[in-house]
Image 1 (cartoon, rainbow, N blue to C red):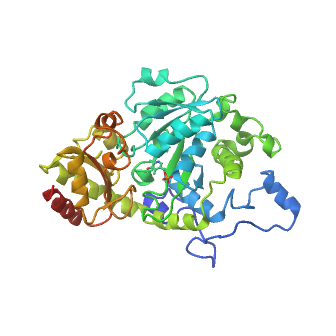
Image 2: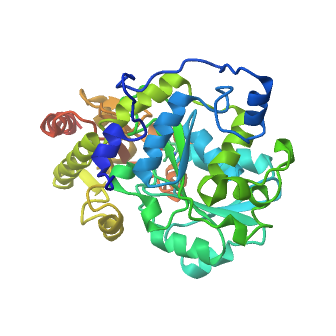
Image 3: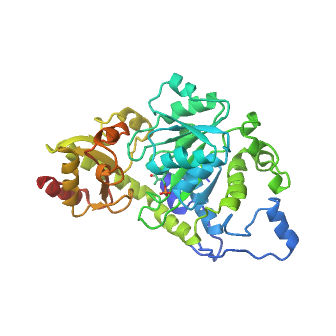
Length: 427
Ligand SMILES: *Cc1c(COP(=O)(O)O)cnc(C)c1O
């Protein structure tokens, strides 16, 4: 069949029912699966046959949805996880162990920053943070003999920095390293990092993919393009026998297309169990069916609202990657020509106090730590998530005291603008 367009994959990808089978994906709410002989089941345990035996490792509903996300991103294999945090953890931990090191962009989601800088450090895995604007020399200076991967976000949450994926892929590959890109904010509807050289793509599906604030989840997609076997010592976990599976070697048995995801499932899901519930996978699929329609609306409304705010006398600055006034406009034009996402940020004149007062007057837009939902929401980091920091400390971590993050939902943009208008009038 001819290559499908993205909207068709959103609706029908991953699942093709046979004659008389359910049109919607079945929810296989079963922890376990039945076999006629112990021998048949033993083959599954040895990875000699593929099939389901215990939902901590794999579940058919989750796999159906993973196959859709795989198709959307243009990968060769994919898996769902219980959260975006779990997806980024597994993606790195599948390559790094104690004593290893990886490089990450500094402007990333706060939860991921903490995972990398605190929790993974406690496991003996070291990280070096680099600026997404770092020069080639600065990037090169971060590479060590024990470096295993490079990580960044296509559009950073909440800084809204756009990653120069092609440049980071070139740097990574020159050093024999895979580039892992968290593509949560644009989703594959607005950007497909694999087409620009990314090797592994991760998601917090909790955001736009689910899109309705219903289910926490994550996903990992492998492009199948990174040749682990060129660096068998660096990627020993993929290229040498796994004694916990009777000595199979993932790259030999599953090829480049399947080695990474099979290892993450067979070892890490088996041992860590960060698996999604079948019902959560089903809810995620409902969201995915309209992802292409929703992303267009989110992105267009965000631009309309950013343009309105730019002209408002009480607003000091606006950041929306799709607007020419944004520092990353050129990168957004290259990587996100059809729109970036629904999240924008802006400053209210009068700083911390004015921003807080403005938000309390909003009626349609709710104050939440969430983003990327059908319902518009906003957050003032200086008085909530970052309230313990002084103004100077805030600026140092890229969050100005007046910054309001607005996640533009699917309501009519005119109504959202009216809400912003009445709130600004009261500041
Ligand atoms: C929210 C988020 C995460 C974490 O995902 P959870 O589903 O909340 O665990 C990771 N990366 C980005 C870019 C996010 O926005």
